[in-house]
Image: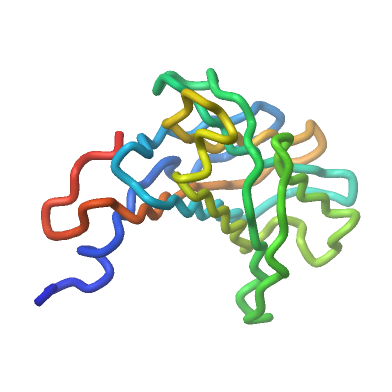
Amino acid sequence: MAKLRFAEGLKVIPLLSPVAYTSTAIDTEYVDMAENHWATFLVHFGACTSDTSDTVTVTVLCSSVSTSATGDGIPFSYRLTGMFEEDNTGAISAATSDGVALTASTDPALSFTDRILQIEVNADELPAKKSDGRYLSVLITPTADGGGIVGVTGILEPRYPGNDIPSST
């Protein structure tokens, strides 16, 4: 019997500690999907200074090597949460290989503060998206208009769950 239900069935790893961003793209650590069925990336936006022209584009990169910023964008599914006080979630949507652009002008409540972009990637679909791709990372590309705080957590569904889950990095 599992002593930690969540921790023995899923692997939670920090991919990007909360960091301030301005106009420079930020790439997370890569995750090796060879030993995982599924990856969920939680992109958490904290306090932001964005205005109505600010946009942050979030892309999932897939690569054959675990070297930063060497991957190709792949399509993925996502959902954007509401702010804590709203206690709601957005519709499940599909992003292209160009990622998803979060724009304050099209979502006035957004201003990116206290929202989580939940990204889902099925490892079984990777060969169709990039034939030799097995490593995933998240690329966050802001415009020059604003800034804020962002962090990324990976939640992986390992092929071999248990107390001693194999490494994914």
